[in-house]
Image 1: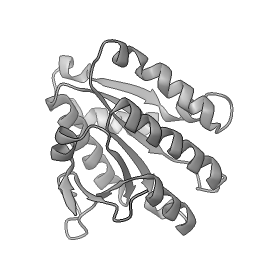
Image 2 (image 1 turned 120 degrees about the horizontal axis):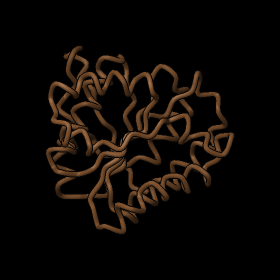
Image 3 (image 1 turned 60 degrees about the vertical axis):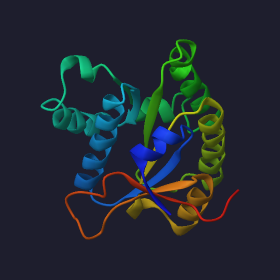
Image 4 (image 1 turned 30 degrees about the vertical axis):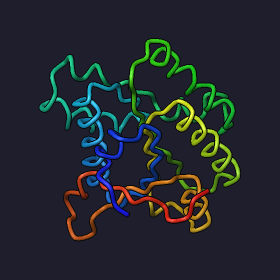
Length: 194
């Protein structure tokens, strides 16, 4: 079953979405749409992204948003986030995330998150990625916030993709017929339940 992501988030806060993206331009358009939707809902967007892509996103957003609107974006450098302990260590990453969201929780402020997960290759031990995704999925359900985890499709071996499908109840769909614009944040619910 397909859903509009904004409609789904409006009715259900604990939405954990896998986005296996293709072209970088489509990725940029998708993350910009998600950010704009978050700001329109007056929710902070915790954007975990690399510095180079963040500059591109910011360039896309600046003509569309006021300076005040840009304050809804809480940027975290993805390298600092994933390797805060010196290596990819799921408990350290989860602790970093908990520390980041704590002020929003204490002030009862709604937030959303976008996490770009990237390495030069997806040769990291898959059990570590699986461990982190399970921890994060638990947090999404417990703290009631939407999260999109973006992975580059071309860098995902089949065993990683299969594992990620099991830890993400929803998958963001790119429309293969439209090369410049994805479906307006359309998600598909996983058929099998955990």
